[in-house]
Image (cartoon, rainbow, N blue to C red; front, side):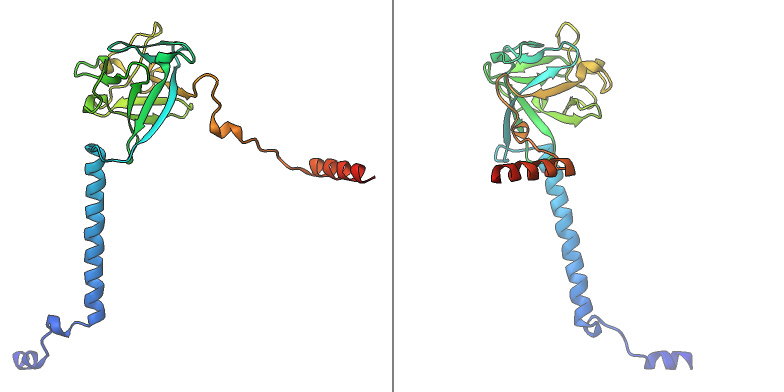
Length: 216
């Protein structure tokens, strides 16, 4: 008897599903697929940026917290004893479109700051290798740290004499890896060119009195 009633129930097929529900399921699947593809693209692109990537190029100095001087690239040698405005202390920083991956090149020497497998900081003429890519980390004390993109946990750092530290002996908390971006000597930061005046009741009253005095 039960089997007889079950046989009388209409069978549900894909053709009986409402069109609106079917289209909704299709759009959800397409959305999931597109978001997955975009996420995969970003991860791939960030990990292996190509030469066609849009780059932001900036010129500034890196002030070392330990030496009170600036990072300079002399060629194969890199130290943190550069003077403010020195030609070897001017750095061309190339930033990738995605993430905070940067390549740092000396404007005068045309060598890049790189870190080899031993954690040694060297200058190299070809900056396309992964050893020459660093990731910017912005710290709470307004300083910036630069960690190697290839060797995780190894930072760009200099001791009190300005000599490079091995990456394996560095941590983010050490002052030796703390830097501050500075404009070249004689150049004003574009942000500082705009000066804002806070308008209060006192300043409004002073302006009114000044305008009335001119009228009289």
